Image (cartoon, rainbow, N blue to C red; front, side, top):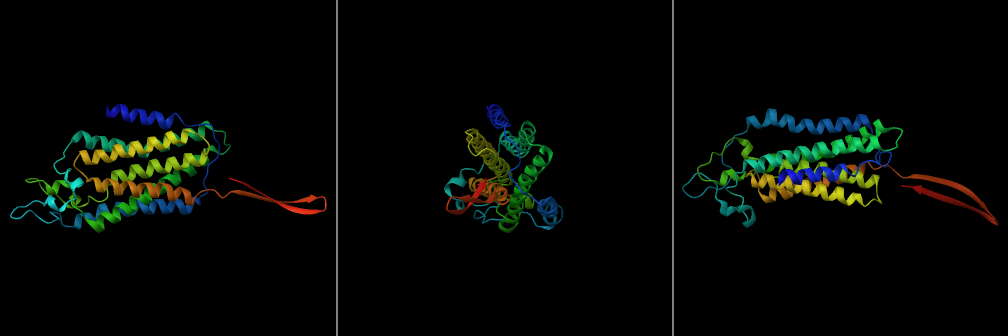
Length: 273
């Protein structure tokens, strides 16, 4: 069933490529590439140098007289996640995250290649860079919040389970969901800017939402995150996936010309979006 859902999402996204030309974005390659790499480097440094120096263990109020966290501290919805431990759902979430990051790149390359732009390579590189910047921004925000909040993962609320290292204090927000939401939203935004009148843009948006939801639920079903972690991750990813491309949107071409009319003159202003 899960494979069928993923397959339908891939077909839904890939079936909409082609037909339009040109990138909807303007970038400064040196600045935007450096910014993207910098945003990716900070979490990588954190993983390599900061986390190993932090103490692991329980990071929540314990059940009286015991060694595991008290789930009474959780809201009613998040409480239902405690005890989930499906390897299948964890695998689904990994596949969903990878698909959400890779498929927009593949679809963008196909989109530009099948289009009519005379600068197809530059257009594809520009679109991919903007989407990568969106994902890197979302990833950076997620890691900063994780380090600041240090929320215990669901496993810390299970009796008899090891608290593990500091990674089990990094539940909020869900990184998998953030990445999936950022990747799919950035592609959906790009697609909408390319085809503002096409009905297929709704299919792209629906596919992206479905893939993000599937990835998020995989984290819940696998016992790695609470529902609130997933919702927060989806919000962070969706905001970055929309705002970053929007900031790079190409300015409209504006033409001003003088027109001579009988009895006087006038200015004509033409804007092409």
